[in-house]
Length: 103
Image (cartoon, rainbow, N blue to C red; front, side, top):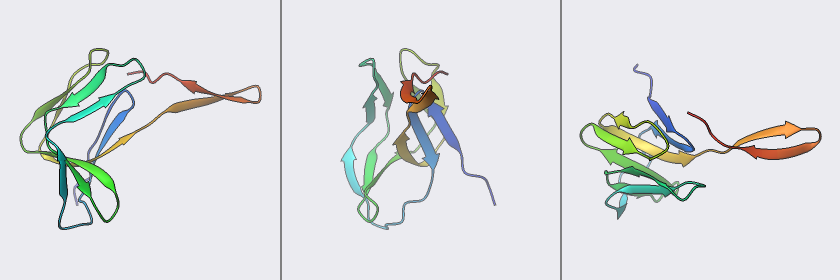
Protein backbone atom coordinates (compact mmCIF):
# COMPACT_ATOMS: atom_id res chain seq x y z
CA UNK A 1 0.00 0.00 0.00
CA UNK A 2 1.39 3.38 -1.03
CA UNK A 3 1.66 6.04 1.65
CA UNK A 4 -0.48 9.10 1.08
CA UNK A 5 1.34 12.27 0.22
CA UNK A 6 1.17 15.45 2.29
CA UNK A 7 2.31 18.87 1.12
CA UNK A 8 2.60 21.97 3.32
CA UNK A 9 3.27 25.52 2.22
CA UNK A 10 3.10 27.87 5.19
CA UNK A 11 -0.31 27.38 6.79
CA UNK A 12 -1.86 25.49 3.83
CA UNK A 13 -1.76 21.69 3.90
CA UNK A 14 -2.79 19.31 1.09
CA UNK A 15 -3.37 15.69 2.17
CA UNK A 16 -3.81 13.03 -0.50
CA UNK A 17 -7.15 11.43 0.29
CA UNK A 18 -10.11 9.84 -1.49
CA UNK A 19 -13.38 11.68 -0.68
CA UNK A 20 -16.12 9.57 0.95
CA UNK A 21 -18.85 10.77 -1.41
CA UNK A 22 -19.11 9.46 -4.97
CA UNK A 23 -20.76 12.70 -6.10
CA UNK A 24 -18.72 15.86 -5.50
CA UNK A 25 -19.92 19.42 -5.96
CA UNK A 26 -17.60 21.65 -8.00
CA UNK A 27 -17.03 24.93 -6.17
CA UNK A 28 -14.25 26.89 -7.85
CA UNK A 29 -11.92 26.53 -10.81
CA UNK A 30 -8.82 27.19 -8.67
CA UNK A 31 -7.67 27.11 -5.05
CA UNK A 32 -6.87 30.49 -3.50
CA UNK A 33 -6.30 30.84 0.25
CA UNK A 34 -5.27 34.18 1.71
CA UNK A 35 -2.82 34.07 4.59
CA UNK A 36 -2.28 36.44 7.49
CA UNK A 37 -0.23 38.81 5.32
CA UNK A 38 -2.97 39.08 2.68
CA UNK A 39 -0.94 37.21 0.06
CA UNK A 40 -2.64 34.20 -1.50
CA UNK A 41 -1.60 30.57 -1.83
CA UNK A 42 -2.73 29.66 -5.38
CA UNK A 43 -3.13 26.27 -7.09
CA UNK A 44 -4.66 26.18 -10.58
CA UNK A 45 -6.82 23.10 -9.97
CA UNK A 46 -10.58 22.60 -9.51
CA UNK A 47 -11.88 22.81 -5.95
CA UNK A 48 -14.70 20.41 -5.08
CA UNK A 49 -16.80 19.83 -1.97
CA UNK A 50 -17.62 16.43 -0.48
CA UNK A 51 -21.24 16.91 0.69
CA UNK A 52 -21.00 13.98 3.14
CA UNK A 53 -18.13 15.47 5.12
CA UNK A 54 -18.25 19.15 4.07
CA UNK A 55 -14.52 18.94 3.27
CA UNK A 56 -12.89 20.73 0.35
CA UNK A 57 -10.64 18.89 -2.09
CA UNK A 58 -8.53 19.86 -5.08
CA UNK A 59 -8.36 17.59 -8.10
CA UNK A 60 -4.90 17.90 -9.64
CA UNK A 61 -4.81 16.39 -13.16
CA UNK A 62 -1.17 17.12 -13.99
CA UNK A 63 1.87 18.39 -12.03
CA UNK A 64 0.78 21.87 -10.93
CA UNK A 65 2.61 24.60 -8.97
CA UNK A 66 1.32 25.76 -5.58
CA UNK A 67 2.56 29.35 -5.34
CA UNK A 68 2.85 32.06 -2.69
CA UNK A 69 5.18 35.10 -2.79
CA UNK A 70 6.71 34.32 0.64
CA UNK A 71 7.29 30.57 0.15
CA UNK A 72 9.10 28.29 -2.26
CA UNK A 73 6.87 27.02 -5.06
CA UNK A 74 5.77 23.40 -4.63
CA UNK A 75 4.93 21.19 -7.62
CA UNK A 76 1.88 19.13 -6.65
CA UNK A 77 1.68 15.78 -8.47
CA UNK A 78 -1.61 14.45 -9.91
CA UNK A 79 -4.09 13.26 -7.30
CA UNK A 80 -7.02 14.29 -5.11
CA UNK A 81 -6.06 16.25 -1.99
CA UNK A 82 -8.03 17.39 1.03
CA UNK A 83 -7.42 21.08 1.71
CA UNK A 84 -6.79 22.19 5.27
CA UNK A 85 -4.98 24.99 7.08
CA UNK A 86 -2.93 24.98 10.26
CA UNK A 87 -1.86 27.52 12.80
CA UNK A 88 1.16 27.07 15.04
CA UNK A 89 0.76 27.92 18.74
CA UNK A 90 3.17 28.08 21.66
CA UNK A 91 2.62 28.11 25.39
CA UNK A 92 4.71 30.71 27.19
CA UNK A 93 4.38 31.49 30.90
CA UNK A 94 0.70 30.64 31.19
CA UNK A 95 -0.39 32.19 27.91
CA UNK A 96 -1.05 30.74 24.46
CA UNK A 97 0.18 32.77 21.50
CA UNK A 98 0.13 32.21 17.78
CA UNK A 99 3.46 31.54 16.10
CA UNK A 100 4.02 32.50 12.47
CA UNK A 101 4.47 29.41 10.27
CA UNK A 102 7.96 29.03 8.83
CA UNK A 103 9.15 27.07 5.80
